[in-house]
Image 1: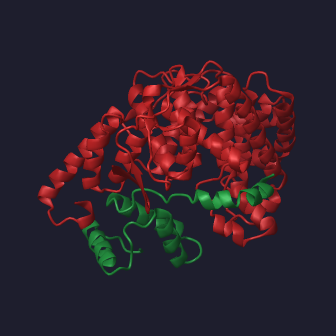
Image 2 (image 1 turned 135 degrees about the horizontal axis):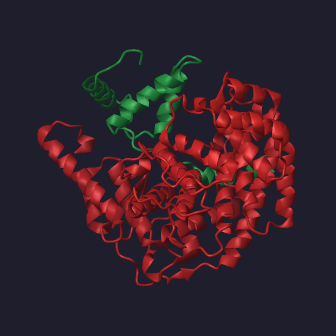
Image 3 (image 1 turned 90 degrees about the vertical axis):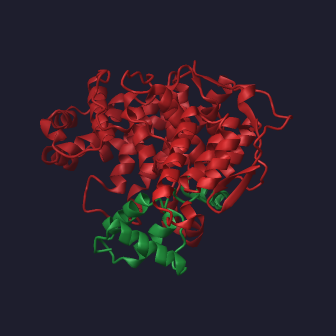
Length: 85
Length: 435
């Protein structure tokens, strides 16, 4: 991510990664963020992630954030309420 | 049958309403007000506990070198905003007044300090966040002439504009200046570059765009106190845009943005809430009723379950306080609008969602209304393939749902398809997914 890529280079790189099964083009943006963030060194990583998302948005690879898992939260509701109240 | 897709979920939607569709509903304002007062008190109580534990919670938050951008400061400001909007409720009851006093007791030391005064002198732009909590305290009859003097010098200094701001943040400065001086927002406040000056549509919007749109409407309406009236803004388009965004975010289960969009719908209303807004309010209410709170969009139940003790309490607060405050503010604004009609015409209802796998928040909205408004289903059915760039599905959704969707969604979806088909002629080797 340190090197600036031209748009056609990004397209080619992402297409290759998808065909190789290295990435899933339907992946929610949060999962992608998490995986990229975990690969970056502590500190100074935020801008890199932001730039990546900007590129991806241009190509419409990522069109929405992940659906929150409301059912799982509901299952924990009484514990969460205990923490809040 | 067409399909609504929500990430990995495929939800079948009947294109034609069933003959057994329910009739319209007029929602009793007395019942709404009673619920809203409880929710406001619930939000205030959680805010108080959050302030009481802010130091303990803060140990688990990433520290920032920037003293006016820390999560702790953000929470202080947002608590102030919640309290400010609640003070505007007519005939505040005893319990709410007691909770507001407790918040004021805590905010006085947290929101005003010699350190903050020194920051205001050196960095005048911090008058924006600091001023909101100060304004709330003034409305809670806790004046502080010393802090007020330093704050006003900063807020009305030309240096406050000597930084790059997004248009809605510029508007926030104007709103705060007006609020602190008791003046209305200047009627022709500059909207140059604002999202509201264009024709935004959720087929192309990001979550930050939703944030920009809603906050622009917050400040223009003084948080729903007045209706937005601008000759240079296409208000019909904006009302449709807010409804479309609500349908999108309802199916994304983002209570945060759904609450902010309902506030925006109130700011744009002409005396009644749209069927979409009313159904979404009902969905949030059902969720709050079940859980006793409303969660933020980033709440990870698995992570919450893996931690314990103070860390767990901190995580719960960090990942739900904002959404609870938004929902509290939404209900406080409803209480300020006793004449706002909340009704859904029989003709608007009747869409049935066939699958039991419908997202929970949309399911709650369905339970509230008896069936989902047709417009919500039509909008979601078109927006999901459109946002995912599944153009064949988008064409099918348009064929099935155009008559129930907003005109702006139909126009923008057709424009999107037209641009795509034109592009395909020039780039026939485009990714398979986008064909």
